[in-house]
Structures are given as C-alpha cells and as structure tokens.
Image (tube, rainbow, N blue to C red; front, side, top):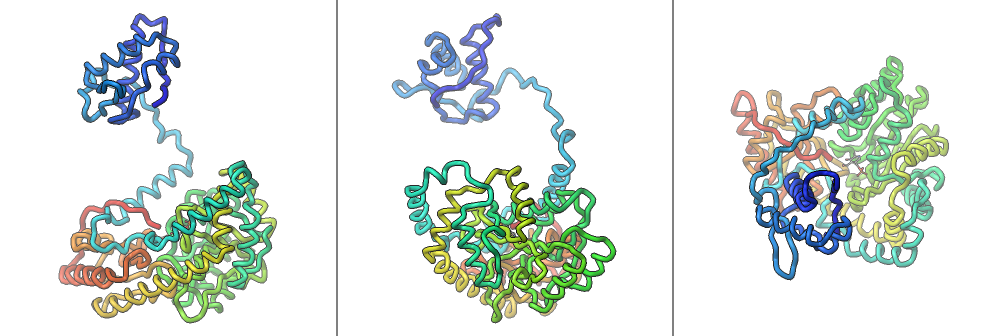
Length: 508
Ligand SMILES: Cc1ncc(COP(=O)(O)O)c(C=O)c1O
C-alpha cells in the first residue's frame, strides 16, 4: 500500500501517534484493511500526513504491541486481520442511517422481487453431482484464446480511440456487421436502426424507462424470463399474463388484454424460449403482430440467437415478419459467445432508437468500445460462425440426450416441453407435487434444477421445474435424470413432497 489518508486533528489533546493508531485499528476492525495487507512505509505515510517519521513508527509499534499488526524486519509492517486480532475495546459509536426508509419506490419493488426469488430459487448447487440449474453457456466451450488475440490486436491498432469516451450509439463497424448478420434470419435493419447496449438486460431497462410509467399495464408471455419481469415491475408496471400454447403465446388472449387494459407493451421470446426451449410458429407470430399493430402496442422481442436452434425448420424472429414496424428486437452475444462481455443490441424504428439512445446516455454514456471492436473483429474473421456451429452441435446433442433420458426414466405422469432451441426445457410434475419443495430432496440425491414459479407472472407454475442442459457435460446428463427421477418417484409415494430450506442461486 503506497499511502493512506488518516484524518488528524492537531487541536485535539490526543497525541498524533495515538490518532494514527486509532484510525488504522478501526479500519482493520471494520474489515477495510484485511489480514496480511502491507501498511505504508513509515517514510511515505509520514510525508503524506505531514508528520515526523518517528510519530508513524510509534503508532506502528503500538499496533504491533496490541496485536493488530506484525513487523517483519526489512519488509515492513503488516495487518493482522480482524478475525485474528484481539477484540476491540471500543465499540463502534455510529448511528446508522435508515437506508430502507430513503429508498425510491422502484428500489423497494426491486428489493422485494429479489427477496421473493431468493425464497423460490434453488440452494447452493455448487456441490451437487449434476446441476441443471444454471441457464448459461458452458464456459468449457469458450473460445477464450482466439478472443484474446483479437482483443490484443484491436488494442494495439485502435486503443487510443477505443479507450476514450465513445458515442453512445455504438461502434459503427459492429452495427454494420449486425445489420448484415441479422439478414441471415430475415431481420432487415440499417445500422441507424441498431443501438449497442450492455446485454439484453440493459435493453429491457431502456425500454421500460422509455415506455412505462408507474401504474401502466405491460403484457408478458407466460412462462417467461424472470429478470425481464423484474425490470418491468421495477418500473411500476402491472403485469398481465399471455399464456404459451404449443404454437406460442396466445394471440386471442393478447387481443382480449389489449381491449380491456391497453398495456403499453407486450414482451415475449418467440424463439429458443427460456424456460421451455420452444419456438412459436410463423402463423402464430403473424397473428400476434397483427393484434399488436391493430392495438398500436410495441412488441418487445427478446431474441435468443437463432443459431442455437436444433429443430427442423429455422427459427424466425418476429422482427423478420414485422411489416408494420411494431417490434423492438433485443439481441445479445451472451448466449452465443460470452455473457461476461455484457454486449447486446436493440433493433427498432429510427425514432424509437433515438429515444432509447437518450435513455442509454443517462444510464451509462456508452458500452465499452474496446469490447465492441474486439467482438466485431472476431465476427468479421468468421470466428463467431465457427464457434456458433460448434456449440450449436454440442448443445443440440446434450438436448437430445436429456430428452431421451427423460423418456426412459421419468414416470408417465411427468411431462416436459420438447425443446427445439436454447438452453433449457420445462418439466411438469404430477398433481400434488411442488417443485420448490422437492428441491432439497433432489439436492440430497446429487441433482439440482430451477423451480418454475419465478417464470410465472401469476404465481402459478409450482409443479414446474426448469432443466438447463447447456452447461452439463453430455456424459453427466443421464445420471442427473436418474437422480431426479428417483427423487420424484420417492416423493410420489408420499402424500405430499417434502418441504425444506430453500436458499438461493441466481435465476438466469
Ligand atoms: C431469455 C433471456 N433473455 C435475456 C437474458 C439476459 O441476457 P444478457 O446477458 O444479454 O443480459 C437471458 C439470460 O439468461 C435470458 O435467458
């Protein structure tokens, strides 16, 4: 540690060495200085505080004598962490601020939502033999080395520009690339109709800030991605469920909701849906769009990358069918490349993009230009295409193994969605079983899943659970399904599934 600020009061009848000692010991007690941290050299600290070096040396000696520091000749003085140090003689004398009372309405809603999910989510699944709980790509398949090379290269070639503040709309070559990329799936957009964002999650947030006022209604497909619901609820919206049928969210229900409540938007994932893995049929897509256009309601399409589709017909984004321009399409590199990039995009009519751009500028000025440029190079060199076909084949293989294992091992009364894309499918348990209550028993047998309730707007779905296959090695899947089937069979023999503690892992 080079130096450290210590507030000194020269008018106080307390020696400066004592003041330094007292301040450092408080930082240690409160965990700001951890075990083993090297304290500033006496010369440095004395210089920055404008005191004599002997004063600092005295403070350190006293700390060593009191057991709060350790001196090593020739190396310096090191903190003895709060856990190892003797108990503090002075208690902390501060009146804590009542932060909860100061929170905004949306922060209180967000806190309540987090709380609710924590209660409904699976526990610590790190130690289970097979976890179907995380809806994420497999990091074992990441093309890390290839990405490192392009990152180094853009840094060398354009670092001075990319590390400066950057226009909020995004790196033009990436927007040009995306305009071409989306044509593969029938989505026609000019670079001016594309805004780069920090992942889909920021896309939802910008849409909510731009279109929702507290008290508005928002229609959402059900089941659906809980983090999107959280954003719309956080904006103060009341959510109305449009249930999924086999062909997609029901257009007749959307129509009825539009007539009765005039929602400000309709959110859905038409392809590779989380949690079911289903995709809507083009016919249902057209009907939904016709209803939305008649009701002048924007459709917020959460577009899982269509490359991760394993069915026979290619996935069609709603945006590709959007003759009236009502769709706001949100895409991401999180599923097809790395979620840690936090890189996504929004495609919409130019006036909508202008408003979302304004909201983005307020939120974070812009997305990392360095990462945008690295991803653009990665894509232009066709490294994304190569990676995408490799992971799509692998995830499709895992999905097939999972479905076959379910067919072989599950009791007849258990059903599931036949995922055609994405990372997961949704299982429905027989009547009388509750997925969240079943989870502790499943974890005890070495398998984890995500209970389905957070995916339901109306608090239903207690018999459902999501199985994510993307991050489970193929060789582990059958064993995981066996453990799950045994858990379900044991619970079916009892009148009611066991209840138990529920802790939290994030729902993604
Ligand atoms: C359906 C869906 N939409 C959006 C996201 C979040 O994507 P991003 O990482 O781009 O914010 C996820 C993440 O799991 C998801 O499942």
